[in-house]
Amino acid sequence: MYHTFAVLIVAAAIGRVGDAKLLVMAGWFFSAGILLFSGSLYALVFTNVGMLGALTPVGGLLFLIGWGCLILFGAGR
Image (cartoon, rainbow, N blue to C red; front, side):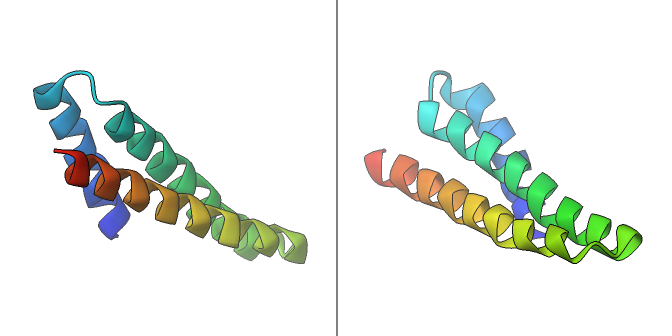
C-alpha cells in the first residue's frame, strides 16, 4: 500500500524537481516491485504454480532499492 503512495509522490516530485535521475530510478524500481511482488502472488493464487512464489522476494528487493534511491535523493538535497 505504501509503495503506491511512494510512486505517486515520486511522480509529483519529478514534475517539480526536473532532472532527478534517482527519482526516476526510484519510480521504475517501485513500479517493477509492485508488478513482481503483487503479480507473483496473484499468479500463485490463480494458477497454483508454486514456482511463482520465488519471484515475490525479488519484488521486495526492488521495493528496497526504490526506497534506497529516495533516501539517497533526499540526502543529496
